[in-house]
Length: 291
Image (cartoon, rainbow, N blue to C red; front, side, top):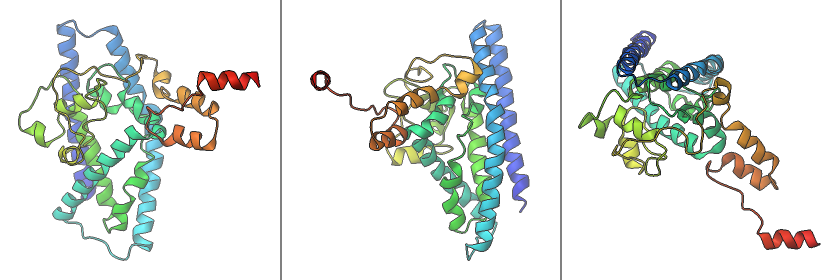
């Protein structure tokens, strides 16, 4: 079984689907005069994130694969055969681990500084699918390592990771409505519009890559009801590529500089992004000033 050939076919298939949807979105937007200058600039900002992201991804994924290969050959004492069944098992395992990788990116502020780039657009179109923080993929090296230790060949792990990410290309759109029963099983455009919503009931929902079963098992599923308001919860609407790349880093830097203890620094980096340091009460502050 030629895993590389299958991986390439899957990747190229979803890229082609994404390009078709993108053309449709642009033609529809132009014909209906709903495609504004800001939307075009935002699409360009999404596209621009590929410049730093690809540079890091090539190095990270290349190094990870070599590292996985070295572990597989020198540490792991047994390896699963490459068959249709192990390929499907790897895909399912990668989808499960992607759920947790994605969830952690929302729940740990240091990781959120990178994943927030993906959520920073006020629009929903295919190019948002490639809107990534430069170092977003670094954590993947650790997340998928257990599969190699369990005996999955590195090429199967790489296939699973690639397939889960490639699948998500087509779901970043408003041009595809609800899909009935498929919305209850798969990550569809409807489910993923929810994930990009910053409305209170849509926040931190629908983390799954391909399947919605993980969200339903772990209590993070939310069906699409009213149209979401896309983007970050805070006021961010920039189309400046550089500001998009580093959208969360200035605030993180300010909070770290203002940290009053190692414990607070740890929480600033690793607590939920909504965590705020407790401020001294006014009475305490006045008393301290009088001393």
